[in-house]
Image 1 (tube, rainbow, N blue to C red):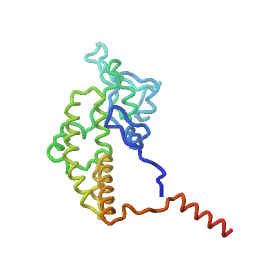
Image 2: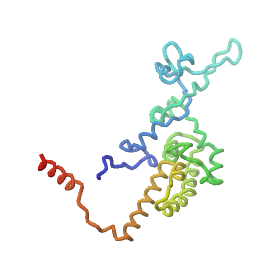
Image 3: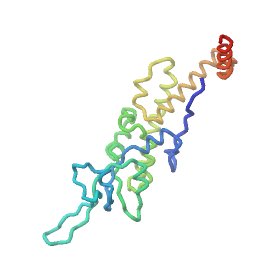
Image 4: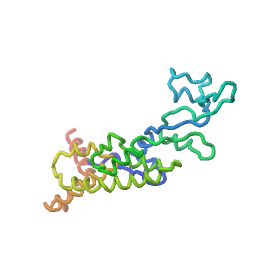
Length: 231
């Protein structure tokens, strides 16, 4: 039976996402903590809780304080919000300073230490189903930890890759749901590729790889023809 949807490869590990990829569309909607640096008129109703007390014009305000009585107000970074990745990338600008991005916890130094110790013990799907793609997109933002993040992503992938492929090649006709449940979406794709390669090899060994079968189009045509004859 032919597939109704042909999977489009993700482009999240490159410069831009592939907007024809369902994985990239889902990944670009993951939330990213940001701090607003300027007021954003008429957006408070969308991004702030109504009980939080946005300004009357529905603007996301800046936070300001008085250093001492009678002094001018000091403008501090504004409200802390969670924007989807696609919106944060669109608003981020080094020159205008519209917003600043805060690293999600899983990409901060504490978790990078855990990954460097033993990346295989972490449930990546629970922490972030698009761990590698989302982390790669974080490199678009100007952050002094970008080099460390990129190295952590690479070393984490290297550390987990061998176990993923070993399991995919040694789990023929076995229940792998417990293992797959802990994998990032890209790792799941690699695991499925390994399983498919193993299944294709088993079919080749049994002499089933070269069998000629009728196409679905011919089979459906015969069914319709028999139906017409019965009528």
